[in-house]
Image (cartoon, rainbow, N blue to C red):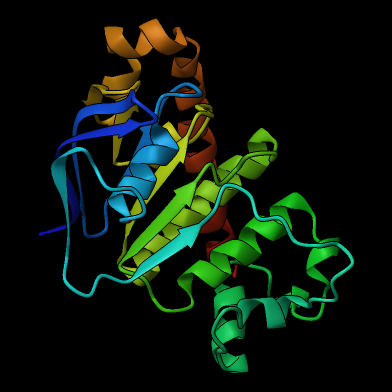
Length: 245
């Protein structure tokens, strides 16, 4: 059962074709990542899938009553506005303190409840935004460039958190990124976009596809191996720690 599906979607904006004949689907518990260079139509595709942009051709179908959690690319908040994290999680609709705390715990930032949003680091802000996105137990979690501004270890850690949340919530995850170092290996399926779907499939398949290499070169093969090594190492470390306990 597809949570969201696009069939033959074409989007024209201002007389220009931004997306041409794009088809994709997202299933339960699946992590799909859309990669592509700047200007390839990634954010437009997200907006079209979520219903904010109407396609000129083709159609998008969403499961009835679909609950969507969204983590935006950027969020500008007036730094002079007094806004503690806990209150921020209650915007635009109020949530109970227990529900907000549970979401912060799930994203590893429960200690930040009383901190001012304006004082958060980039990594802390991303986790708070993620907590806000999962408050209603979404069936689909949508993330637009979620690790922009984070270093590679920070990005890898964030994507491991996404994998954990996918298991905890049982949701599908749809991510957009132009940063390739670890995002691909955190995915079940990768869609390479450049106004149209150039290639798609498992990360290892896409990383070796001629269409992908024409856009990005061959450098991400090593990054995939690095992520696998770090991921496996962290699991080994966790198991050793559990055994010690």
